[in-house]
Length: 221
Image (tube, rainbow, N blue to C red; front, side, top):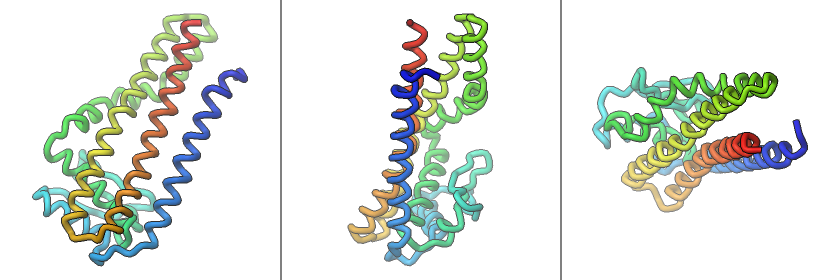
């Protein structure tokens, strides 16, 4: 591993990733201590949002620690114990964000459909590109190197397409949360939580784009 690679790719990636994670952790922790004035748990808030948008057939169920996601295959919203049972700004904002994805799925939101169509290819590409790249370097086969770049570009594309999906889900969540009569301070807190979580996706996309630019640069040398 060259010093140039470390300075231009590894170090910036670590700084971006660690900075984003530290910010997310601080915001989640801060607003997990702020009770929501509606008194609703995350699960109750999620079900209320489903009813508000008239979304049928979506189950809200408890999951394990850190398991906050919407699964389109089963049309379910899974919430971690903290989000499912919690009555904080962090809990309700997290729950409503996941329902935002359920709302996207219910109305065939195009960026979400595009992202979903990329999943099978990206699952393969994300694991295969580095091995193909190494083969290209070791065997001096330019075609392998080019194929690795193409596969990695698909991974970056997936991360870029993920951004509008995440931002849109948060906007839908904020629209519902405002409708419940939350005071301005709790709306701001909810927004800060969702913005912090979105930052992790932005950081991942930036780090991957940096890696892709490096690969292109090495290919042209």
